Image (cartoon, rainbow, N blue to C red):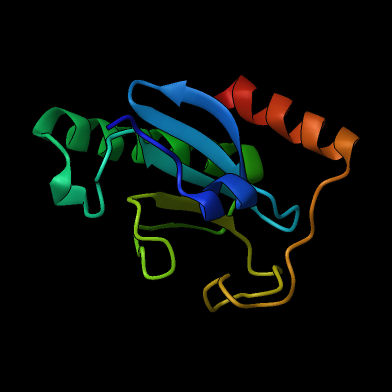
Length: 133
């Protein structure tokens, strides 16, 4: 069976780029610089479901994304999480957080409504992310 992205992840994110087997995606919420890393391995629900090479690659990709996103946004804190309670398909959130953001100091999930990008904002955000990643 071929890899298929979960419908909710497909609806809530847009692909930024590929890094090995990891699809680096951006959450459609203009309030945050929020990446979602999805290893394109069929059936992966937990990090330990990945072959060793892919698991290390996902970890390295998460580290690099967090470091580069922090440099770009001057974030006060980087949140990295692989929860999977709402979407079982393995995915890792990398979120640049600022003390002034709407959800601080709590998690971003369930706080307010997502603010989608207009076409120009989406293009600009993708250009900025692709330049640093």
